[in-house]
Image 1 (cartoon, rainbow, N blue to C red):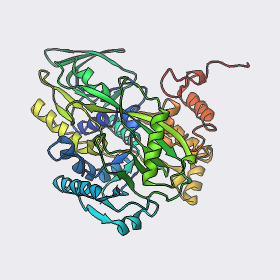
Image 2: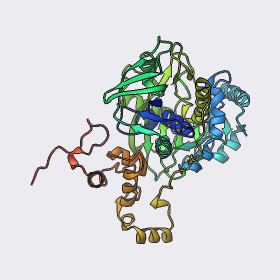
Image 3: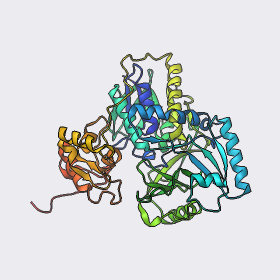
Image 4: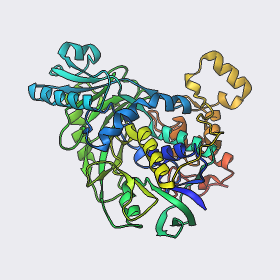
Length: 477
């Protein structure tokens, strides 16, 4: 029998799995996708929020700032790129300034460190390319940027190295209460477990309703984004928000850890929980709104657009608790922004819930909190590159010219725990295909390497899901 089945391999499920892997437990992570972090975790603003906007009397306010403070350690342990670049909420008039004061006061309640309301000259000393009409801003230096999917992949890898099991392409069809816990029915058979942790994102209410009466409803909320090319050098230095409104934090403009500029999102409730198509009208709205912040944003440098879904709860807050009427079944639901920022603190809270439910957990003496370092060839010095290539010539073969990703990096990404098995999975781990050609040149070589390393025909290598085929058959023998 398993001790814990975690449903969902996004950043919530993988972080909780990694923290529970500190204890003597048999842990299984399930996800219906063919890779870790393939849904909400793969398509969001990638911001570690400071915590000034989440209401202090909500779980969002309780967990955001403490979670933010934990990112330096976790990213150091798991070798995940993370930068504290700070955020600015900009204002254009006296009403905006009043909003900034309210955010500042709420941030003090949430114990957000080192905030400051800046006057116009202070703002432009930090961000000279902003709209000249900006008059003030709330500055929060603790805000940061990260690649959420890379964090989730690292967490899954570390959890697996400490004994957890990952089952992908495994969709939960039903859950049955038993005398000793739960029986989880999937498309690949049944799993028996003492406890279940529901981290299924926009599907958490559906999973909850398999075992108990409905107590919350998830309304998927779509956001569209633009990604700008890296050659827009130093135009934006911080995470830039406009004053929030009833639809959320609004359209932001931010650097990414890879050096691009990310612009978005909008906010639109949708019925389809798998709806990831972008919308031209919504993208135009984002463009027009972002230009209010940065009139010089070069939208002729867009290299990609994408959309993601947020799991908005009808209760208006995170839902992190044992489900009513389902002992040993924990929901981590309504996990929208600032979910990513909060997850280190939330995961510790879930561990405490598990300790209360189980009567105590026994720690492992041999838990390893680190993972093997990732070689990022384009960040090495010339001398380091020469030594590496001499040791392993695969690192001398550049596959992705835009991002300078080598064959050695791709091979390593395939053979790690929770390794890549699709073109998108390689992209998420190495950056191959993230550049201005978006895989137009390196894509075929990535397919070849995946096929060779996995021992599969190239026709069985997909871009993403099994429906996203690339090749069907040879045209010439």
